[in-house]
Length: 155
Image (cartoon, rainbow, N blue to C red; front, top):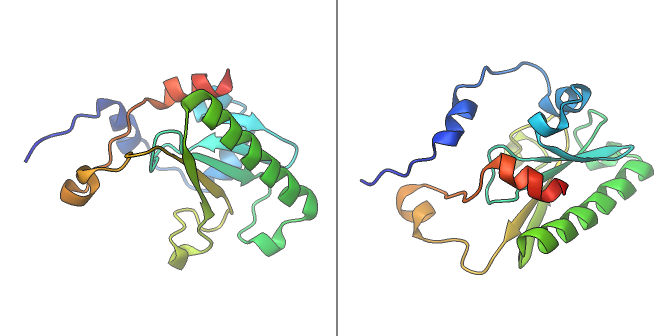
C-alpha cells in the first residue's frame, strides 16, 4: 500500500469537537478568514467545506437554524439562489471549473452530515477530476489548501 501525505489535514483530525451547530456558531464569531466564510448576505452566507469532496467545495447556508426547505421564507430562498449564482460564477472565473454538482442532503437518512441546519453543496468539477484513487484506495486527492483557496475566492 502506498501512502498519500496530506499533513495540513491533521489540524482538522485533532480539532476539539464542538457542541452545538457550527453553522450558527461560525458566523457569530466574526472571524471570516479563520472560519473560511467567503461571503455574507442578509439571510445566507457561503463557507468553504473543510472536508471537501473536491477542491472548491462551498456551502451556502441560511443564518436561521432550520432543517428543511419548506421552513425557508422567500427572502432566504431568493438570496440562497443568488449566492449559488454568484459562487458558481466566481469558481468558474477563478478556478476554471467546467461544471458543478449542486445539491442538498435533507435529513440524516439522506446523507446530511449536519442534518439540523439546511445547507446547499456546490462542488466544482473538471474533466477527468476523478481517477482510480477513490475506487482502489478509498482516497480522494484535494490539490489545494483551504487557505489558498479562500484567498483566491475572496479576491
